[in-house]
Length: 64
Image 1 (tube, one colour):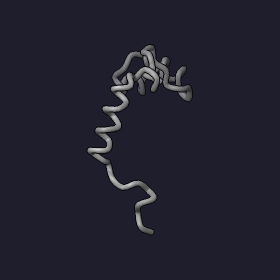
Image 2 (cartoon, one colour):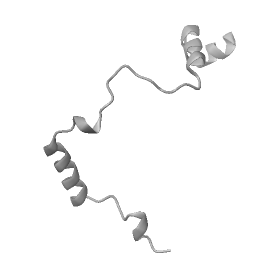
Image 3 (cartoon, helix red, strand yellow):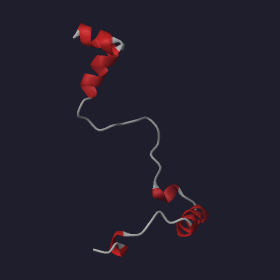
Image 4 (cartoon, helix red, strand yellow):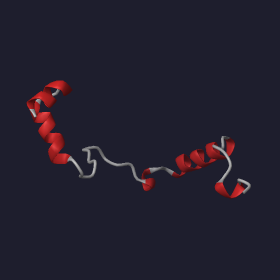
């Protein structure tokens, strides 16, 4: 294991932290933004921008 850790160029403690976290959900300390955190004017601005700058056709619009 030491050789692999050396090749990776990381501290042994970092490697063992990764092994401990492997397979678990990615968690962080910051607050996760929620849709109710947006002010009504922000929601309106987002929707207006989306109407003015569409990303493409919806799946229902694609022939086939």
